[in-house]
Length: 272
Image (cartoon, rainbow, N blue to C red; front, side, top):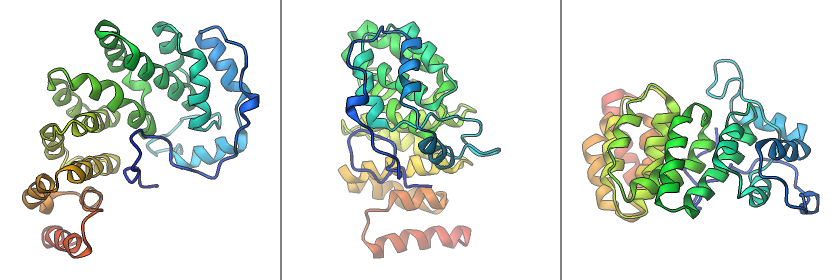
């Protein structure tokens, strides 16, 4: 699986896969009605079966895999972002109908609209979007959907509110709610608030899911990019107990000799 945390971009997008280019001239030129049905009709016209097959494999949709049963249309994120401008006025109930779609890109499209409404809304609108988001986490069920939305809705809300919500999410039996919790802290990291990330990282040390190990290691690395001493202090206390993937993601930017030293600490405990 591709390294989800390696991107230096401020916003998360799907990793670049060998997909076909799109033709902007093929996009709708007249304002569509802001309904979920109209959006799905537009998305259906953009579907590409070849790209869909690639995405089905990339996002692990086989039986027993984390994305089991997910279905793709085969539309790249830049295309979805471009199209979303035409549906910015879609009412929240219509967005939630779109979020309930069985197609991955429909749900991603709905999340793009939710992020836009949160960013452009007043305090009341933002609270309404947050509550809708948290009530529909069952449809935010792959890592790209989480990574695109959690910092920009949950994290942005927590930047000016109490962070108790994170404690509830990180204890959830849902892999995706736990990932929402840790990825949401990216918004706080960007504001030089590191303790929520460190607290969740400690809570996730024994989490069984590799996708949580990667996400946590990525957030720890983001802390280190801004305040290396804080990350080193955390690693000095917890490296020996960290899952290997989490540790490797966290120390990715360290000099080679320091990386090897932290890995040796872990190996002394786990033997691998």
